[in-house]
Amino acid sequence: MLAKRVIPVLLADGDKLVKGERYDSRRVVGHVQQAARIHQMRGVDELIILDVAATREGRDPDLAFVERLTAGCFMPITVGGGVRTVEHIRDLLRAGADKVAICTAAVEDPDFIREASQRFGAQAIVVVLETTGPFWQITTRNGGKLHPDRGNAVQCAKYVELLGAGELVLSSVDRDGMMQGYDTSLIHHVSREVDIPVVACGGAGHYRDMLEAIQAGASAVAAGAMFQWTDATPRGAVEYLGARGIPVRL
Image (tube, rainbow, N blue to C red; front, side, top):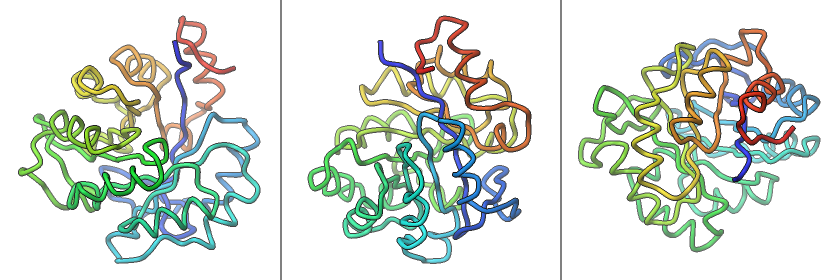
């Protein structure tokens, strides 16, 4: 069985580190590069960095910032935010990203997933699905726009896998930053319908939340606020999971 991954998530507004709560990410709490450096020293499995303001502000990915960020990091990094073209993906990979996360563009123009996957390989393409409500509706633009025509998260997940996504990040708008646990029912229903890795995101507040997400079918568990605002660490999460029989990389 493949090892389960524990992935810190850094929410960015440019180079500023921000705190998200139900996708309201206006509170500045530090600098992304400093936070990434701390995680590098901790030896985390990988890191996800999402510029949550780029799409809203119509900005392209900040390639110079990504180059600076990845120059001193030797862990795999997934970068997202403002990604709308295959040229953006190409440039981010050249700047040092290992994988590129796409959300709004993937939902609003699904053929973009196919084109990106064919050009760069599915392993480089991560689709972030924002979900909300009891029926897991799909949103984009940081939870600001509903897409009822895309079905629910389960249907959309199956579709983006068919188009060539190599990995899914399931992000709950309602649980984001609340530290009250992942939506394990969502994780269960999506993970049993797709063959690509599913990363649980949104809601982690305790190590046991991560255990429950993995038991529900997640291949990896991502957390932002939990690692910023509690004593929990990625190493502590890995040790907790390993002690409970979950295959992890120690």
